Length: 241
Image 1 (cartoon, rainbow, N blue to C red):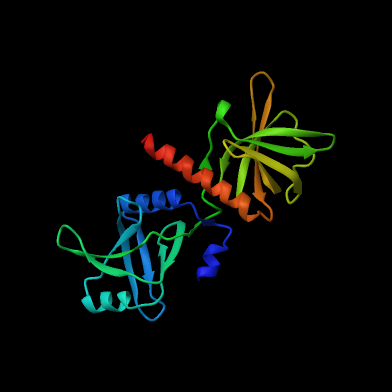
Image 2 (cartoon, helix red, strand yellow):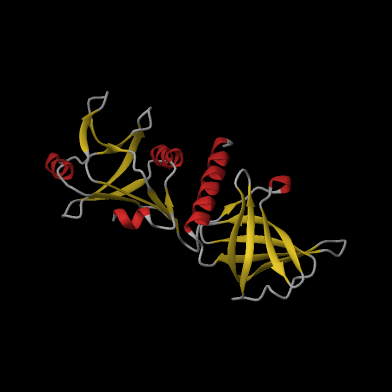
């Protein structure tokens, strides 16, 4: 389990991002499944992350004997019961008393969590205008620059203006592409064309095509950058609500 999360292309290692995700789970009372792998399964939730960012507290079971078995387990895994799957593990939980007199499981904030977004990959609208992410795609004789309108851990949606280049054929692999991320720079990627979603025509005769592109053999470094950007974007959107 340790190896699978640490080496997962969807692993997040940033302590700050992990705390943000756990805090968000506590805020929304996201249900999680706790599994000791030796017969104890508990549906619970994150209560809070400690002020110093070192510990996370998890709600306990009503049955003391269940809590005792969990505390004495050598391996406990957690996975959210939501479309966005967040998974992590712990080798030791403690039972601690809270200020309200109730008890909770306490564990160190994990050094890595896995965050996978399913259902055709959860898509997040990206910034537009001067803050839009730009994808550079090589075509015959030139490199076109197209803005993103959404992103997921599985791929991107881009807007192509004017006549659609011949390379945008469903299933075609686009090598040598890249995305320019703020404060990070240019990240090289390969893309697979998944199809054209829509074509918009303007009164002046212009055409805008929306194209779905899937990441192809995305490396761990690029995957981490993409997930980091999406977490930051979600945090900004939440702060504005």
